[in-house]
Length: 192
Image (cartoon, rainbow, N blue to C red; front, side):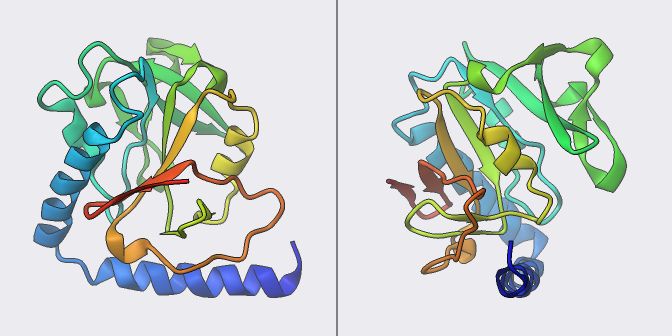
């Protein structure tokens, strides 16, 4: 990645972190509840049998609410765990099977979970700092999801998950940046 693009992305990351920090806990909770309802209402949700979720960081949409009610009934769910520079995926029965690890992440315990492959999933939910209408995503800068998604199945639907305030008109992407098939916020479901 060239230096100018690197600086541009880092400046946008800082601006988006600041924007997210302005949300109060109550606003984040209310927006997260609406986002969870939108996730379960999107067209790719019902037919999906295997879903890759993520355990949100404090500033991200809290999608743990998917475990209440019947949104995940009949579905196999997995979460990622970072090992070095690689994300490994593990099936779990609920968020209670996640442990807090470095950087405040909640991740599956490998010894207690069955490993999965990215090609196993019908639906992949991906967090990010910013999303654009073409499916562009700005992550936190580690490239973990970009590397993971490069091996996904053609049948997998990849949906970026963020708050409406994280939508931007356009992103300048590097060749390795993975595109989302859609973006879900508390206000809208965009598909491309």
